Image (cartoon, rainbow, N blue to C red; front, side, top):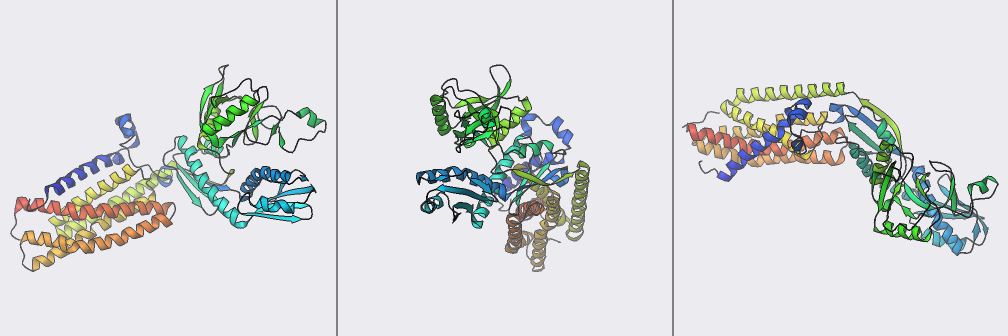
Length: 521
């Protein structure tokens, strides 16, 4: 067809067909889609998920308290500090955490010799000695780094917990230094979500301290320094060793199962290192109780009746099936570095989301009609070709967004409306060039080729600057701004394809059949 490559023509046709096919679900109602589309197709042929402002749902602002995070780290550090002090042959009181500082009173010995060893335990430690009081704290820089790492870790854990709950495309973003913005489309009652996020889910296994009982403590006997009394949870009060036999980070998987009595339980399996430690602990401590501690509560404390070599077992308790499922979910998703506090909660009604969809769709339709009428009025049949290319552009944009699983928000709709207006900019440049070539008295085919070839550089330059702006908005913006940047950036790429390739292809097809001797633009 007048030197137009066949592979390029077939590429345009195939891309247009694929674009129309994958964009169809976006134009179907939710009920029609669910009832008419086979389940096997819904996993890959699906509409764009709608954002909170279009579908309605819940928005939670979560916060990690820096003091809780520091206290947790200092509590973990205290065991190592006690070991250093014992190696230095010192006697001391039980470490106490006061306002972000680990305080230890030295009874006997010179702690100055141990300070250098304590500083080597972890970077960012500020160790000071005031008389017989040893104080250990983290520097401000260390706390900020700790908080930044904790937020990044918490975002991934929150994502796994929320996704497992069956919600679609939650928006989870860092806000400030210590907060996380969680938006969950379609969820009008976030109570279950808050319960799951409110649990740290720190799982540890400890041996019982059989040198002292709970009854002994009631009579005034002190708990040894390397042990702790836990009287919270489903099990009876128990004194356990502080040393962790196996931690939750060694957990490979957890699932809902049944115990020997047919009651609901949670099964678990450790990774290789955890299985090795668990096997060693059960082999050497037959007859002792092994406490299973979740968030400082003993949920089970069974007696080790025999060696357990496989690194797996079950957690029993008075679980309902739902409670066991939630526990397995939280264990699989990992422990939060510190508790998350809900500092703000908003619910967007589905009615408001529907209003937003109607308003956005109305804006798209009005904008599209205005562009269509303008192009037809100014450029006639060439405006018609540009309008057909614009329709393919819209189908292509919807298809790409659907395939990427990008969540459509109200700002995203604004980006689509802007794309509709920008998509014909390239055609305006092309047609202006074609007018100039026509005035020079060239043949129709020369006018078509020269119009597209001579305007290509200007088109690419203008589109690239817009694309750069969209990329900057995506990486530096948050929330609605990123939704706008995604549709704008993809719209730029699809517009280049349709405005240049598709429009020229349509014009050449018309020229092939009509064979005009002159071109009137």
